[in-house]
Structures are given as structure tokens and as C-alpha cells.
Image (cartoon, rainbow, N blue to C red):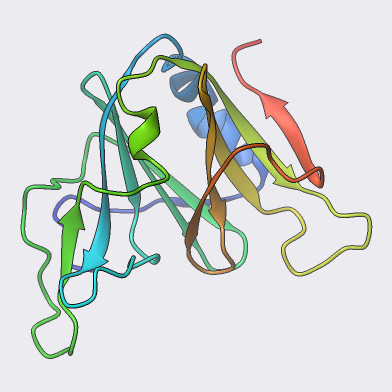
Length: 170
């Protein structure tokens, strides 16, 4: 993708993700969200949802990226959001790091209460069954980075009831 420092390691399933990242995600509780970055196209400001969503918690950067229908990569302090995204010179649109998003901005400055892994388990199995979202809960509410079926999707508010919660650090 031309993102400096981005070397994803995709995992499948809540157990693999919990084993690889559960304790580090749980340890974020008590830290403040001090910033975030996501990629938008310079020409129309649309979100480039294939790229990771980067959240900064008092200097600890967590990088969340969904891929395909069931893969999730979580990185730590590797992406340089000040570097230019390269390799897109022959395309019509120019991806750039952005630090504005109406869904994320209300959480900046607030203390993280908990991180939860959410597993999509609908009553009638569908294509998304088993996908894992990462939910960040603040006093002011929750935000989730979910699998939008081969891209990242950002949701706020209460999670859909088809998600099974897997609390971390308890």
C-alpha cells in the first residue's frame, strides 16, 4: 500500500487474535486517546477503507486493519503517519493521512475504559460469521473498527446484538 512501516500480520478468529494481542490491548485501559490517523483521498476526502486505522493512546499506537472476509491485523507503533504514502502516482486519486473524522474526534482526550473483541455470530450464518471487530469503550461511548467485508468500517454507539463479546483483561 505504500504506507511507511506497515507490515501486516493477519490473523483469523477471536482465539488467535486474543492470544497474539489480548494482553497488550487490555493494557491500553486507563490511557487517553490522544490522536488518530486514517487514510483519505486528497481529491474528494473519501475514506480509503482498505488502509489501517491508527489510534494513539498516550504514545502507544495501535494499528487495526481488516482484510478479506475474516482476516485482522493489529500492529503496534510501526506506521509512520507523517510519511507520504507512495506507489499511487499512476492512479487518479492520491491517498493521504488524515487526522479528522467525525466518528473518532469525540473520543480524543477521553480515557479508555476497556477494549473488547467482538465476534460476529448471527442466528443465520452469513458471509461475515466469525469476523472479529475491536471495540474501544470510553465513558462517552464506544467505537468499533469492524470488518466491512474486505475493508475497515468504523462504527460508534452500541454494538449490534449479533456480536458476542470477548472481554480482555478480566
